[in-house]
Image (tube, rainbow, N blue to C red):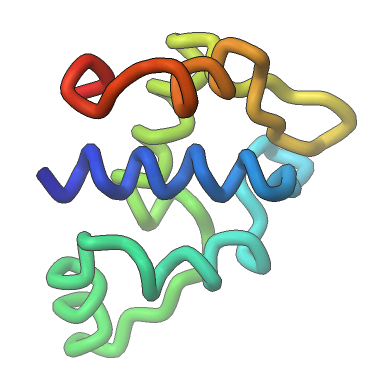
Length: 103
């Protein structure tokens, strides 16, 4: 499932290093752009580029906003000093739970 794959990719990225947030609370573009090539939602991104669309903010990638909201509700991430971090619950979710249970 592409959504689940991309969600796990988002959490693994947070495990490696925290993600910077903007003043409004959105994920900064410098942290989004490296993830774009790895997401399986490439069809939607290619369709937007076909019409001359360029990424300007997180809200334009609805699935990325959904990842952030789901992870916050599940207490997998937390915010400190304008950065998103993976919580202890998030680390346990990635390491201690098998993929079927995660799904």
